[in-house]
Amino acid sequence: MLSTRFFVVGALALALSACGGEKKSIADQIGPASKKPSEAKAAKKTTMSPEELAEARRKAGFVDPDEERAKVAKEMERGEREYVKTRLKEFRGLTKDFEDRIAELEKAAAKWAKAKDPQRPFDKFKSKFMKPARKLMKTQVKLSENNARGGKTNELLIMALRTWDDLLNDLGPDLASNERYPEIIKEVREQLAKTNEYLDGIENDEDLVVNKFYKEGEAKKED
Image (cartoon, rainbow, N blue to C red; front, top):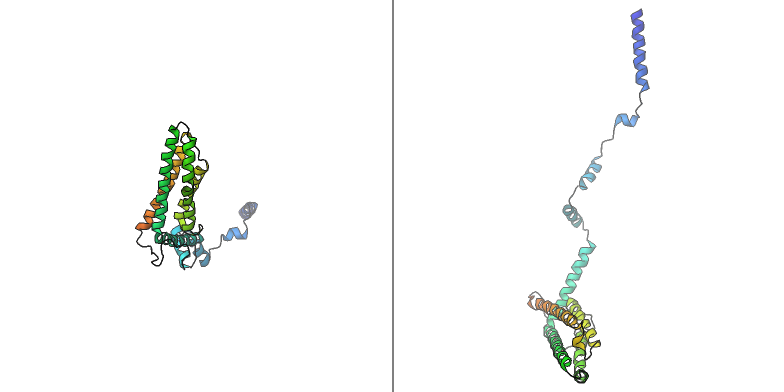
């Protein structure tokens, strides 16, 4: 009888001990649900490399706006390069005239610096120089059809001519002694050199199509 009593008490103690612990929820007891096949597939997609993702988007018909804009810009510039190549002789003539005007100014400025009265030779030079010097801008505007054509070639020309125009506005008998004078001359020459380099690239690009119906000096737009 005594042994039976000890057995019952022991069993009761074990039951009370178990009840005293923290009771887990049903969800905790069951554990996390297994992923559905569709969810597993989606998770797998996130591990794709950037190249694989780009290829998948391309196959799906997605068009990257940046790539599309770059493509359009490249095609447009090709058209402008063909426009320039058709008029290459005229663009070359402009840059050659530009170089001559720069050399003419440098030579004259050196003489003014040595003259006893720089004002007199300066006035004489200026009266003949300013018209052809500013004609460079007019020729550029005409060749580019009021800056509507020419693409990067015209952009480079505009940069060089703006520097040139600033120099002409500050022209004076003491030009050679101006500390900014050598820097400006160097700057305009470098900009002009970039223009000529770009023209070289256009001239040597055999893929560009020249309009054989264009006549040199035409101001009207092509059809």
